[in-house]
Image 1 (cartoon, rainbow, N blue to C red):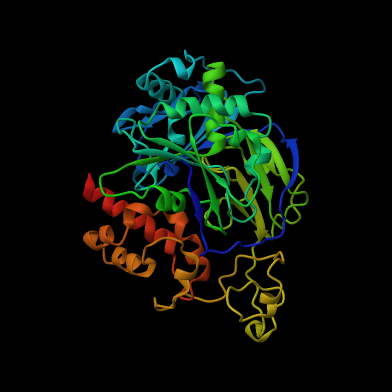
Image 2 (spheres, rainbow, N blue to C red):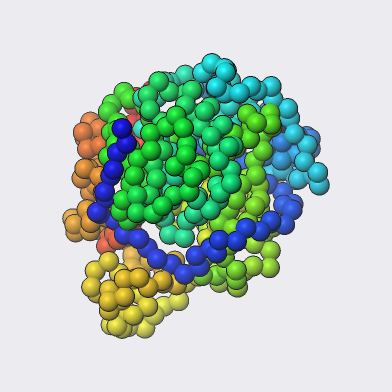
Length: 451
């Protein structure tokens, strides 16, 4: 039985630079990157050294506490740099790409004909397993757990996000193979959630072995955490796994070909892009390779791996994140505005009626990174509740995190949330509080208490 979820709280932030539904092939990447810091809950143990040759699918590092969880190279090439931080913390592994790709061959079978343990073993050895994340804590899933359900959000409601209907068009067979493998991982339901107010393509509606749910409403309706909250809430001691549609394609290609094919389609978007569109490239690609001759102003733009709400500022010489399928370029800002708060503000976005822009709700904005204020006292303004579509008291939860009151955090719903669920709260915050980093801290504290 499918569910219909209608979300009223939230906001669709409309920005200039929506990617045109045109698919191009990006320039051959000169190098790619693996960043152990992206894999929360993992303590990396390096298994290569600088100068080593690797194939696509060769192990690069493992989880020190569970060495079955392997992180593999997305390309064939040479390890040219290993970056470390304080106390020799492993930050990044840079791999120079070969002209022609050479793959490791993994012995796999049709996922329908093998056991759950064999599917997990194939995902772990190939390095595909880290695409599977778990709630609570929003970390890489533990393969020894048995999740009560698996959730897949077929759409992303964040600003300028890629259209998965377009990205997956014509790949229904590969997607279904990936789903067949995913369905083996739980005795519960696999929930495939589609946008209810749009007609999705047959890739999603024709999927078999899953429960298709319709989700209505503005962002963050596409956040898998919001969908879990309304369909199968997480209680203490329960585990739910999540995965993105393009990651399922990667799993499908693994079981079709026996190779770790890390190619992906990335939406290049934002007001500072000359031609916003989709590019076929590789996981961990260098942004300067992906954006070659496609930036309006390199000096005045912020280069974000991901979307403007939750992405990372990596710079032009940075690399695409492991979990990112979008690159966003927006103006850096930093210029003072004389009496800006007194201007009518037709070109300024506001959730309140502070500016006259509320008269044009469908207008697209060219917003920069200015905070338009500084940090101040954390006050109860009621603004968070307007954009937070969960039965959770967001301000109370955040304050319990700040004082590290684990019992209060548990009672206030820490197990159901992830930093991305609070992204809009950060946008509307009158106190300029770094909400997402506070939530991440709270999740880490509770996880430590539970371990």
